[in-house]
Image 1 (cartoon, helix red, strand yellow):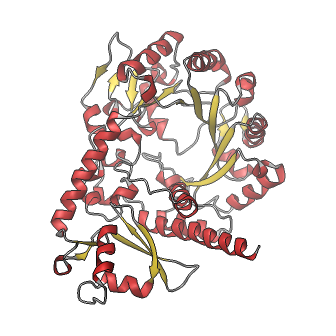
Image 2 (cartoon, rainbow, N blue to C red; image 1 turned 180 degrees about the vertical axis):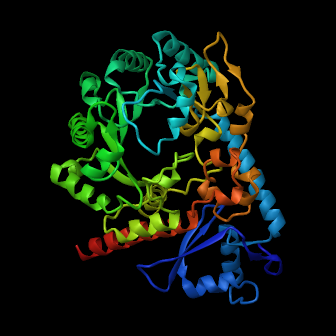
Image 3 (cartoon, rainbow, N blue to C red; image 1 turned 30 degrees about the vertical axis):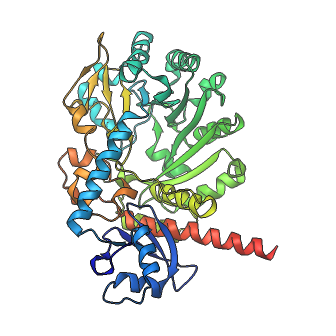
Length: 463
């Protein structure tokens, strides 16, 4: 039984005002994972505890069990979060490993903001390099050196570039896919989609889990930013190839890269996908991404970069119903909670690049993050040797989590957010610059999920 006199409001209690039910507040606890909808007046009592205390002992015990009231001091609570983060991170590190192949650094587009443009400083010795069958075989061997137990391998392998689906790469892509499928894996692909039709005979949902294809706005604007180096505009061909994937019942996630110049195109694209029938497919998904959030983006005056707050506000007022990709993942998690009562997932990292991702590149390097490929300072090892040769970067990447990042561990959202991408911090930016306003995204996502839940309940009651 909790002792009233020693209790205080937990530093990790998160209140969210519910727009669809004024006068009610959703409470989330940052490390117990508790979620409760309460009257806002009750939240105010909890917030002002123990000065305002009209609770019975039973109510105090419930609030303590849920985590909203705690006997821990702020220092003790912070210490608990750090220890919990360390335990969770160690458990992640012992579990699933995920793998990816950078088939080539070469690309048929010349996107002005591409973070891989820096690879060109290595000359054609890198930019013209493509995986060979021998290197592919060595990469598959290295997967089992990293984790001998296949049951702890993610069942889907990433294929990436440059642009991996260049028509001239057909043979090596076929080799990778057929070898992977024979070993029991599927693949997911990040591609610009231009040459996808040259791989039509490989496209089936028993080989591929999903594709991510990028669009940069409506036809005219997209063609200025994503032009084929020799054939020009790419919009219509990419759109047609998205349809090809949907016909094969392969999931497609269309990422619309947006800035202040093309944000108005998001709604037009959404309507176009409806006209084409793409939106009716259960295999189709579309989301908007802020170009300014691409790590190490190659800054250019041709793009009007949006800050996170402006990007979020544009999405809210666009009438498209689209959300920031990270906000959408929060939305799906709370939707699962409201509809299926699934517990919230606690996370201590921004992504698996901080504990278990291994991406094999064509020069022989191993990386943890797509946005570090080709950067030798972030290379965690080399697999183009009889035995993997690890570098010091490995411990740096696989050692970071919210518990040992000061500004994160003190944040009430730490174990829900998992922290931001590590690369900016590693490249010299201050920790305080890393937050992408998770709190405002969570507020939007929770309200959307809860509003849909309430509306569905009302419709069910009417029926």
